Length: 332
Image (tube, rainbow, N blue to C red; front, side, top):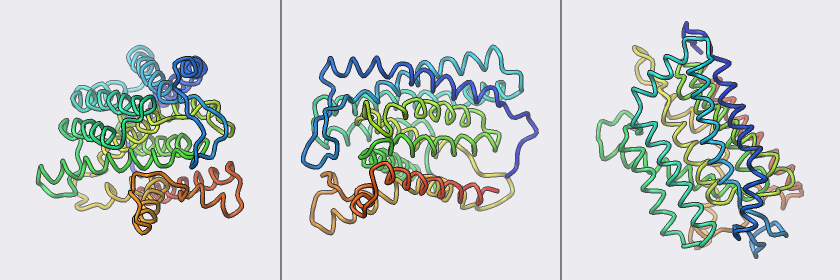
């Protein structure tokens, strides 16, 4: 792995991660109380494994961590960071201003779609339309998958499909305590480290920020859940993972064609993607609509084999770590 000569801005990345962690961790009890008061509650059902009503405060906590943590990280980079990285990061923000705004506005849109679904459950059509709007916004800003095919329609289509896939994969994975938030935290850390290692400070800062946010939420969600992510939280996690996979540029001038832009995100996100593919395959073979939930996810199947829910979550975390480890080997 090749590092640029510029000093590694450890203080900036720590500020981003810690500000997100502290903001999310400290505000979660307040949002739990609000969720109970406002009726933002997940009730036990025929295919749900929890037995008690649980607040759906996760999305609100993540958004609070994103707003406060992001503001603190930016303030730190302006006021305190002693390396040359803040100038590079500010240059990156200026150069990719429309893309950064698209990420933030898309986050609000994705959060809002999920929150409305948590409150009202308007059906899959509403969620799908909102997801497409947020994905289209990102693609229109210039953050797109090209696969080395110079065709605007193709790049828009693949980018939208990628974002929709990740959002729904993380939504599917939010079926057991700590599963979605834990996998999301590890994947954010992996994307942040890879971005930082390639001298892409904006990517590194954004990745470490959301890593800290999810790490701050995790104690409230695992092993005993005092609150769930809800659709607002899982949509936000999936959207950020999809964006963090698209933001970095792994191409180095003169090296020619490289498989890194394809294989690194797939390896880092192997756990949610494999779970999504397997569940869709099972539902399709059974003649069921793919959007109708069931208990055939990796976590459920591990529990049916005798593992506890905590153990099942840990094994899937390990799967995610192995995939990311393979990605780091590929990038070395």
